[in-house]
Image (cartoon, rainbow, N blue to C red; front, side):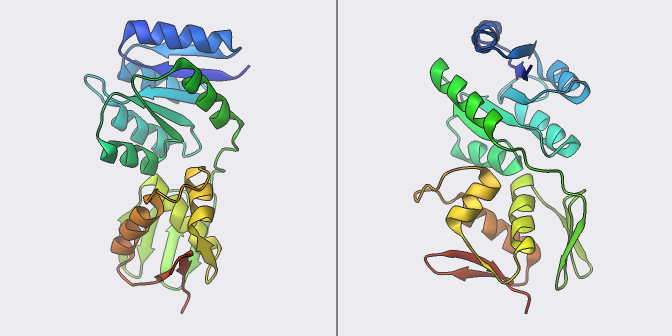
Length: 221
């Protein structure tokens, strides 16, 4: 049976969401605080984590970071009452598969849970990629360019990994949005462009070429 872990410090919401997901046939685990939720997530196999972002003590962002470091294939759907759009972008770049603002419709939450469970998880990478002077360790997400090293967020890692697996190929924004974020194409989003900008700052060399009105290309020469 599919297991879902719900982490939220609001007892009423925790019970409401838990019962609704159980009614859909899922096996639901719950945690009323972030520390307990992180412990359960690290010690119990679950198929999806529904994670509140704003919690006292260890906040949801810290839990997300810890879970992504432990297993980059973990599916995490973030819930949050914050109106900060940058927080949403940060969670998606760190590795969350979805972000739902509070208050939300229960039907929408269930639909998103179902959709994210049906999607194929990102496979755990197991090799080292090299393109020119760029070396990407796909186990540690560490980037090395010549003698320099840098840490990557989960989305930066997935984006660079895709570009490095397709060197000199032009990858469209639609392709990157689908492969890295798991979204259908939305012409109004700038997630890809923002992430490419951050990657360029870490690479320093202008090896990611913008192909106007199409997408991006990682150049080997």
